[in-house]
Length: 96
Image (cartoon, rainbow, N blue to C red; front, top):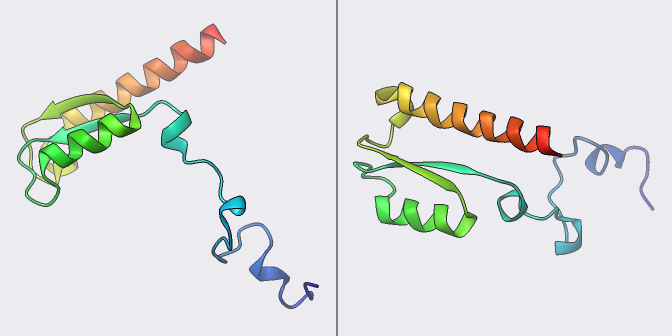
């Protein structure tokens, strides 16, 4: 039984970790469209690893010659992929 004092650990906005796989929602990348911007000069996450992750997620991929801080060094490329994702979402919503 959950006591009122303990309820804040299990209610909405709880910071309690799921206790079983049944409590977890399906991973969004398995069911929702995604986009990925590969930074080809990244020294933290190798570009081939980025490509593998984006393939696994079924992402729409763009590549840019940039370091790990692509958001700082190539803001236009980041804005472009976000814009493409938003346009795609609007198209899907209009069809539905």
